[in-house]
Picture 1: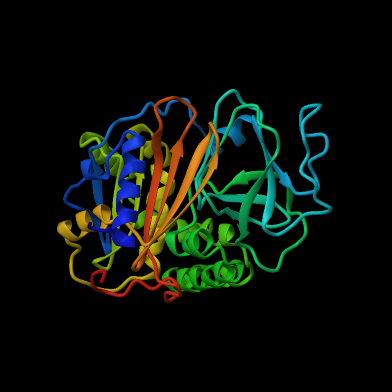
Picture 2 (picture 1 turned 90 degrees about the horizontal axis):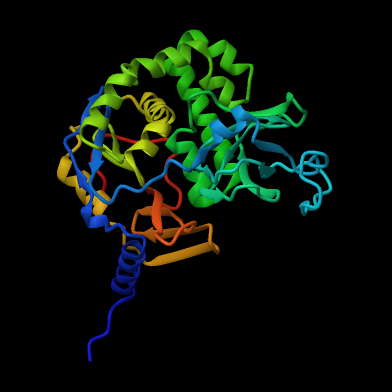
Length: 362
């Protein structure tokens, strides 16, 4: 009798998971890259096209007022009568409370920056919040060390942006607040080097959002993410659902969505985050290789898998492999389950902060 190794069994289980969600990862194909300076983006095509029109984004929900975010301990008066209120004695660094009052399910992505309250925070995990939800604890990480007084009672999102990969990484993979702060500090220092005229203003704040919204930094980011509409047109023409990201020729990240429409909704945020990361690590390197990008996307099996499910709403899975992590979010709101978002990152237990040296992934 033949027995499967742990790694082989993990691969089979992962394949079954994706098959049950109606999409095989082997259907995805990586196309030649779109390159801007040291940043290369490989469009991802293929796979089943899911209907994601019913999903509400955080930006849409906050703009309309249908989604409410507040500090833990400050929720009274913001919820419907009879709803369960999470019990917290006071505001906490790593916890916000969210209420979805809309008629649509709300999609939250790890890396979205929520500004306001006593500190700016970054969302730590992908999740779906059902319509007319009771208040939920929102797992977040602070990206503004040193402040613990309310700058505003109004919560919003960082305009047209998402935390860059090196800031998302310790929140998603390590769940380590100190490492998030460390990487925010590195990002601020390197942005000051990339935009020297803005350095004095950056030294006067610990806020990641304020650093990224500095006019000089925005110009630098725009210089890499320039012609946003043109980039989006290129992706739309080939029916792309995501991209594999390479910086200095090294493949570091991938984001894949259930539909091209959903990628389009998040594209401006994503391209600016990739551009910011590339500015932090501006150095030469061999061009990224399309075959390596395809191999990066194909390699999703691992030696450890952890899943969390809210029955009838979502299933979130984290897969750990040799030098990488994969995160998937499955929508369970209908009979036809599907993978809403897949993110893969190159990851070692303690990688150099924000460092993407020239060369390819091991």
